[in-house]
Image 1: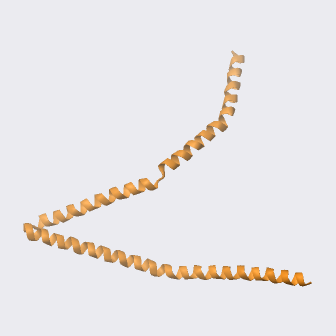
Image 2 (image 1 turned 90 degrees about the horizontal axis):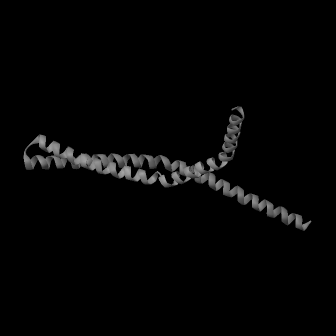
Image 3 (image 1 turned 45 degrees about the vertical axis):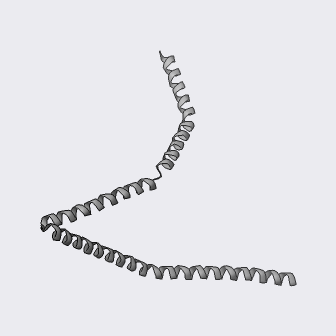
Length: 141
């Protein structure tokens, strides 16, 4: 009887550990859910500050260009050209990173393996069909 009591205590202890672990996971998930909203707000505010800083720097550069050349159209044009240069650099960097993320070699490897497997699995059937059709054609003529 003493063994059954110890076994029952052991099983109940393990059940309580699992129950405690599951409640801990539940509380962690709830905490993560509560912290997502402030994270999104913080990221949005960071983008707002970044955009306003960029606008301020571009206005300052436009004013400096106007101060040096005293031509508004030239100052606006130089600021626009500077922004276009930054834009093209960022787009080229984005395209480069996307190409590196696309895993071309991995997809090529798996697609060539699939083609090879398809060819290996269908080639005996195709050969049998081709042999039957040629033998039928030979018997008809």
